[in-house]
Image (cartoon, rainbow, N blue to C red; front, side):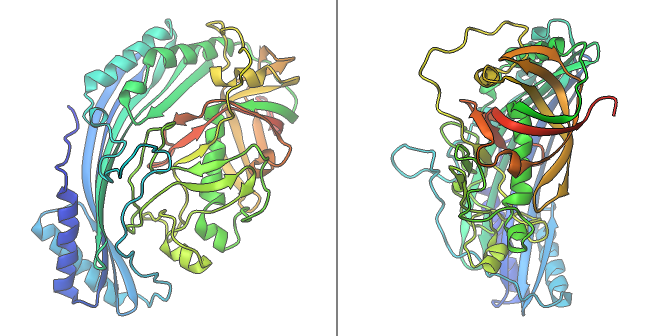
Length: 487
């Protein structure tokens, strides 16, 4: 069972049809915007070192937002025949007439061409529909995903394994009554797996715009090495520790920075830590939202948002200085700014936030590197040079169950997971039991607090639908551990 690729232009025809129906039902004064999106996901799950589920799902969603006589209403349907589309329009027109006045309506996106990605250095204009799109990934078969699961299990060397290999495909089109009309498509592959032995877990994750980039053998061996090295952990007392966070853990920082910090609505309501123009981070920190992907991370999203605004790279932090937050048209109007192309179905309520953030890696060192790692070494390759510089601290693989205690300062509490080790004089000396932490994320990456950044940003599977984070390892001066395994 493989994913069927939707005919190019099909969604754009649907969107244009809905705009025309709005004119017929509500008259020429109605302002309408229509997003038609076809999402397909194919998932191969494994547990107890065996594939136990192979599923595929595809749905086309039509979303209409209508502004009429100073009022706004929205509707959606997955029924895309003539009756379903007319029903959507008639329901939304009826709803808008019962809605309260909407003085915050920002108007429609005018006709605007799609952008080239900043990461694309070739000549000529790209196609908004096809740039960075890997059709082989979109059409991936269960057998192709199963090959990667098999390789993961074999590489784990008899350890119990579990996880998934997933391929996704989206094609979408937008049209509004002001004449904006755009379309695009994207595909992604991801693998996330654990290996387990005697209560010790190791993890390996990777995402890419190409299924061919996922090597189950490499991921399985990495997870197994971590699991074996995590046995017989010791407990350490709470306190502030020097840490190396591997990319999986850093992704949680990027996720929370995006949702709570670089959120345009939170910023305009003064609920965010972000201060434009302020040196809030260490000078080594540069954060860029790259919805169109780049040469370094070829996993593009759709080239426009739910309001039809073209997307492009957005520098959030440059060399420690906060430069921007994400906006849709509503938050931009409130802030006196321009939309950055971050509208979503929930952005008017939850707020617009970046979804493709990359923390720029450090330049690779020119001096000779470290010797090859032993197969049992639990340190991810990209983190090894950072671990070598730790006098006494912790290597942390992953963070989970993280919750915001204070959104303004972004104080987070959570747990370590899938491997923690004590590092002394640059060497891993003992496995450590999982610990609870309570830490302000901006403070942890503040001026003078970042002691090193890995030389490679790893693209990781999304934690929420549509989000992708590319993270290197980080060496931080201090991380506040507030409890250990025994409480």
